Amino acid sequence: MLFVADSAKEKIVEIKSKDGLTEGHFVRVSVTSGGCSGLSYNMEFDDELKPDDQVFEDNGEKIVTDLKSFLYLCNTTLEFSGGLDGKGFYFNNPNAARSCACGESFAV
Image (tube, rainbow, N blue to C red):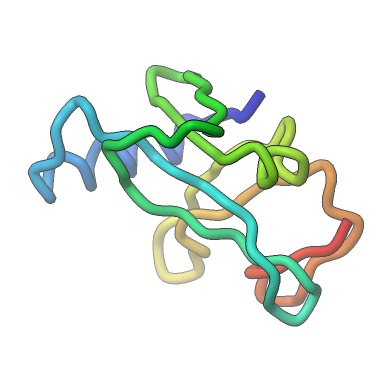
């Protein structure tokens, strides 16, 4: 399961409204090689499902990931922190053994 915190839900709704995205759009998250800790998170809005997609709905938002990324993201919560000291969207990933100082990459 992938989870969406209230803080992330509010920002997702705001972005969808501002950018004129339809109800068919969802958040796609994935993991790729890279970053100082070895793996990096990617996040984007999409409206097309792919054959190996894993689809979850939490807090009224649909979140989609490919099967390979789900192995790294299982039980992860998408969160948002705003303001001057905020990080923007970030992933609270219980599978990460370590992450870099900026929080952009992780290792398992």
